[in-house]
Structure formats: C-alpha cells, structure tokens
Amino acid sequence: SVHDGTFRGMIDLTEKSLPNTIQVQGRDFSIHTDFRIWMRFCIEFQRWKNAGCGGVLDISYLFTDELPAFYDIEDYAGIFDFAFPACKVPNGSGDGDQTLYYEYDGDYIYAAFMQNYKIDLMETGLHWHKFLALLKGLSGTMLNEVMGYRAYTGAKQEKPEQQYRKLKYAWTPLPEATEEEKEAEEEFNQYFGS
Image 1 (cartoon, rainbow, N blue to C red):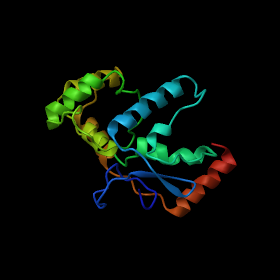
Image 2 (spheres, rainbow, N blue to C red; image 1 turned 60 degrees about the vertical axis):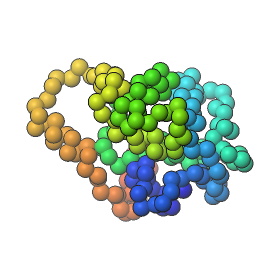
Image 3 (cartoon, rainbow, N blue to C red; image 1 turned 30 degrees about the vertical axis):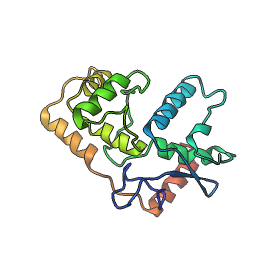
Image 4 (cartoon, rainbow, N blue to C red; image 1 turned 45 degrees about the horizontal axis):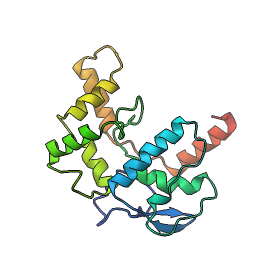
C-alpha cells in the first residue's frame, strides 16, 4: 500500500512491490489485483454513475477474504485511489471526453498489447497498475487511433510552437502546494463557498 498517502504515479519504482491492500477505517484489507477484476469494476462503476448512482454497486468481488464495513463516503477512497490512481502528469489529464471504453474496446486493447508488448492478455495475469501503465505507453496501434478520433474536438489546428508550449506545461510536474497554501485555499473556499 502507499505509505504517505500521496500518488505521484501509478507505479512507484522506489518500492519493491505494488499495492495489494486498501485501507478502510484505518485497517488494511486484501484485494484482488488482477486487471480483469478492476476492469470489471470500472465498467460497473461507469454504468452505476450513468444510471444516476442509484441502487447498490456490488464491490464484494474486489476483496480476497474479509469485506470491510463502509460507513461514509471517505471509506471508499482506497478503492477509488486503487482503481483510478492519480498521476502528476500530464497536467489537465482527465479533462474532456471519455476516449476508452473497456466494455467495447476489448479487441483493440488485446491487439495493442500484442502489437506493442507481445503480451497475450488472455494468457497473463497483470497487476491493475501494471496494466494501466502499459496501456498509457501504447503507441502506433488501432486503439490509439480510435481514442484519437474520440478525443477530436474540431478545434482549429495550432502552430507547432503553441502545441509544444502546451505539451511542455502538460508534462512538467507542478510543485506540491505547501500546508500553508492548502490551509489558505480551504479558508478562502469556506468564506466564498466555492
């Protein structure tokens, strides 16, 4: 599990292993880490959100043995941190339209992993974070093309120097906010209700 509670990327190469537990109410609970389990969770979570977050979202299959008791929304943070690990770069990532649909893109994902890495996803067990890191690194595949089509906005093409300026910003990690800055922002938000 992540020791200081912050995610700088999915895979921390200063650690010898990837997380296999999540914390709920201060206790660690063992989870399945195979990419198939978490892909299923992402699909079911998206459907649940699209349906207005009504009804029960079954998450019992995420845990290897004991199922934690969830009392409030913060108790689910560990699940979301594991399923959707935050990344420092690119800045602005996560904005815009959804470009990947696990339930529809299985053929393209499978083909892309074979093409780029010679990994047969039907024959391997990959930790979810390894799967996501490899997915991010794909290039020159039909999946990349399809995702590019989905990301198309129709915006006017920028000059190369403007594109590179934006790319430089997107890929340069931003400095961490100090505790004082965080407190000042919280105070501001309390006063102005944003």
